Image (cartoon, rainbow, N blue to C red; front, side, top):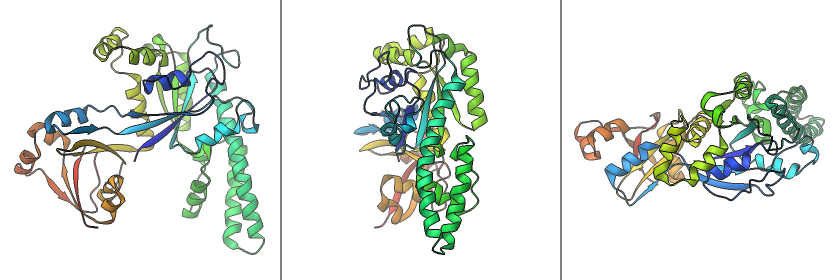
Amino acid sequence: MGITCGIVGLPNVGKSTLFNAITASSQAAAENYPFCTIEPNTGIVPVPDERIRELTTLVNPAREVPATVEFVDIAGLVKGAAQGEGLGNQFLAHIRDVDAIAHVVRAFEDPNVIHVDGSIDPKRDIEVVETELILKDLETLDKKLDQAQRKGKTGDAKARSEADFYTRLREHLVAGRLARYFPLSTEDEELWLREMHLLTAKPVLFVANTDEHGVAHGNGYINTIRAIAEKEGAGMVPICAKIEMELVELPAAERLEFLRELGLKEPGLNALVRAAYDLLGLQTYFTAGPKEVRAWTVRKGAKAPEAAGVIHTDFKKGFIRAEVMKFRDFLRLKSEAAVREAGLLRSEGREYIVEDGDIMHFRFNV
């Protein structure tokens, strides 16, 4: 399972610069004016993970395939977007298709980069974007409420229950609260909420786009964003999009020294992807053989058949067992044969819960 993360925020907060950096491309125009992004740009980037390189060194496969994250750069939202202001509804619709939202918030001062509202205020900026998402969700919700109320008038008890749910959820949104914090009490309510694909029901990762000093030492803007993230139960990661852009333009051999000179240990992309994985409750397992070493993304807590299904649905349907090695054992003993000889290759059944870093081979029958 790959994951898709939509990059949203106000105009001129650094979304397109960040997108260009993390995809090491110039697909998105990064200009100093609002609405430079006309169509949503997409880029698939590898998940940085040293373990796959170590496995490749030991196994020497024909190819190496990392896990990936797809980032979608969506045009800047402005106040009134839900009613069509700016580029409006067409871009809000793109957010429905992503697994999570990376909400980029400006956390730096620069008189040469115009802010759409004339000043730097992370709290206000976050509220503007969240309000537009809520307003768009209310449009979706009102249609469902009307349908359920009409059906309920025919005597359909379940439809009346559904209408009651939509009414309570509507009150929650009108009060300025996000759908992901609405308390759900039944499986039906979970289903009704999930089927609407509400924008404010998606997990959010705040990306504090800051300057060189801010990413190394922090600042008041970052502290404000972090406090909001903690209050909302969201993720938060500070990144300097400008540094990330400069980094990908350097030869690979010079990047580590560049980071050291800035007092940084790793590229911001690493922290961004880790935060996205943590937000979505994801982890990585590996398959390793002479044809390929590959990283696969699966949710934390997944059992072996579900992990098998990430490769192919037939693997899940016909699952027999999983042969499992721990990454640390493989790294220490250097080969599958040595792990097996040491008695550390285990045969696991349907109830086995996959752990991060597991190396797995599936036996199945279709």
